[in-house]
Structures are given as C-alpha cells and as structure tokens.
Length: 227
Image (cartoon, rainbow, N blue to C red; front, side, top):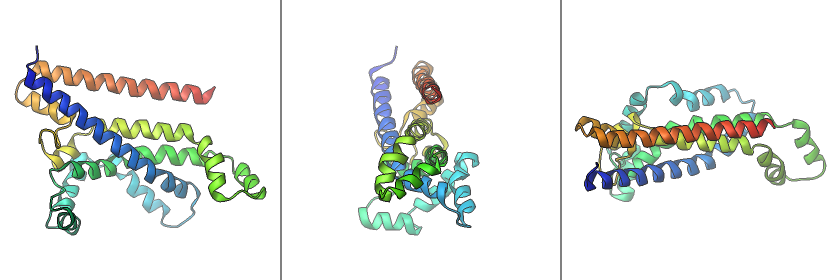
C-alpha cells in the first residue's frame, strides 16, 4: 500500500501535470490556428525554413532541446534576464519555464494537424464565399473552422497528450520541485530512483491508461471523420 505522503505526492503531481497540459494546449491552439492557416496558404520562400523550425522538436532529442532552453531561460541571457527584471523570479526551475518549454516542445503536434485540415478545404468554397460578399472573418468563422474541427481537435488531443508525457525537457528546465515542477513523468523517475516500486507502478499505470484513452479518442475521431 502507498503511504499518505506518496498519495499526496501523486495527487500534487497529477494536478500539476493537468494544469501544465491544459495551459499548453490552450496557448498552442491560439498560436496554431493563424500559423497553420499561413502555412497552408502561403507561398513565401521562407515557408520551408519556418516549417522545418516548427517540426524540429519531432526529431530533436528532448535533452538537446531542454539544454538550449535551459541556456535561453537562464538570467545570464536576454530572455531569462528580461523575465527576471519584470517578475523578480527565474524561468529556470519554475512552472512558467515548464510552460514555455512545453509550448515549444509540443508546437508541431498542434500545428501539423491544423495545417493539414486547412489544406484539405475545397478552395472553391472559399472563392464562393468571397464572391457572395463575405468578409475574411466571416469565411473563416463559418466555413474554415467548421470544416477543420477534426484536425483542430486532433491537434488539441496530441498536444495535451504529448505534454503529459514529457520528460527530458521538463527535467532539464524544471528539475524536481514538489508542487512547482514535479509532474507525473518526473515523479515516476523519482520513485524508481528511490526504489518505491509500488508507487512507481501506480503512476506508470495511470500514464499507460491515459495513453490508451488518447489513442482510443483519436481512433474514434478518425472513424467519425470517415463516416
């Protein structure tokens, strides 16, 4: 059986993980819709470079990304120094550092499904809307967004799930501070390191169950899209 301290640690880590994943997903949704639309419509020569930068976290080892974010967020660098000057606290080993790191790390998981959904929209529908006198805002609200809802939903699910499963980036940026940066993946590592295998098993089962729910949701979403 788990002791009360372990139960409390798991509960705090779960709440922190859900908070981090929720805020990351909401911010990424705000960023991904205009960015995904631009990527789906633009013919700018810099588009391949921007796409490569967005996709980089997919293939870059998390520890490499975490290392450079750690340097960027340190008070000795402009970004970290500006944050410290404004808020009198460091980004490194803080929840906000985790949040910014998670946004960077999960960005492609949100942008790519949204962009792909925009690409699939029939151009004739947009032209017809313009011909009928609809503004861009009206066309986007009543045509683009409804037709892209499955792609947007998929992006939200993937970004949320990817944030929950982060390890390398959050460990380097946030460390292991209870109630501040100790998310479930870090807690699992900590429990294994201290040989608390029963507690580690409970955390691991929770993460496996969550991963199963994510895959099941995506499968059901694709099935509805094909009906």
